Length: 214
Image (cartoon, rainbow, N blue to C red):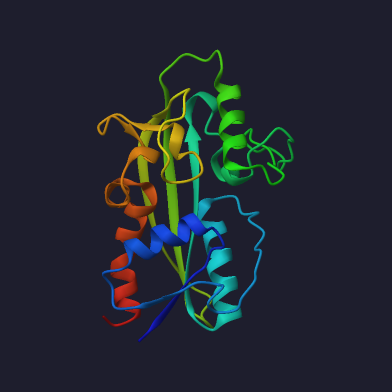
């Protein structure tokens, strides 16, 4: 069977992507399965740049077609922060010059600590704290410098109390009004219909089918 490497070390992302692609006749391989340990510096200025860097690096290292994503939470009251720095958000500021995202380097903070820091920065700002999750998928083919992209978005708002035990990252405080629940309160099936990553993967499926001639 044809193989696709899921180019991430994030176990939560791996689980979601595996579930989202279970209906395609491709063997999904993790970096651990392939015996690869890579830590790609995410220093791009867009989600697409970061996703492409990861996809290309893993494709070169494995010799397999590789799929990577870069995603972030953008909160309107924080001028789009944490944005590109969502996975590194924390109190120690270390940003590129002229950055519009006033997030910092989280220094290995746990998800709960990043959520607490986000809520601390929102304290005193008028609600609702509207926000959106964004995801960009990049698909790279070994020995080919070109990369294919797909994107997805999920709109909602940040709430001050955590709800739900599912998901990861900012899911417990990301409330989706039409569902009347947070992302962490959704089942995997529900999340994989409306999350930003789900929508990006759905948009990426025709690309994968074309690449693998399915």
